[in-house]
Image 1 (cartoon, helix red, strand yellow):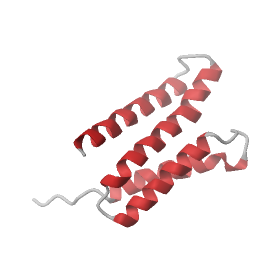
Image 2: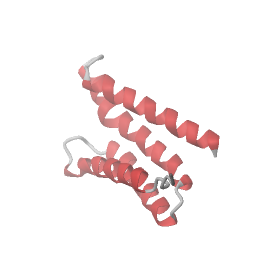
Image 3: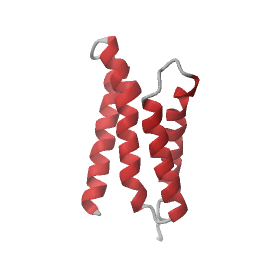
Image 4: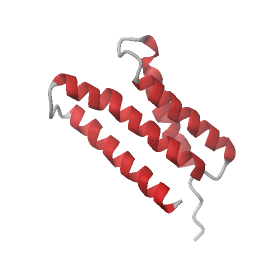
Length: 107
């Protein structure tokens, strides 16, 4: 479980590095688009997939798997497709699920 959390964290950081590299145009336009519009969403989808079994609420677990799938599927849709925006919906859903499932701290 601890290794899975570590792996999920590492993948999330790599995804953010891909996004930053794409935004700041470190590479050619083709590579920047690949990093920020495809690889980023695939890595975030993998991260959500690894996080899903760690969620305490089973309903959130299935929703997180769905968010992961939407991120990955959306990453492979053509950029000019009307459905390509679903990857952003998957990203937002996964982030919301991550934050709403955090344990409450008792002080």
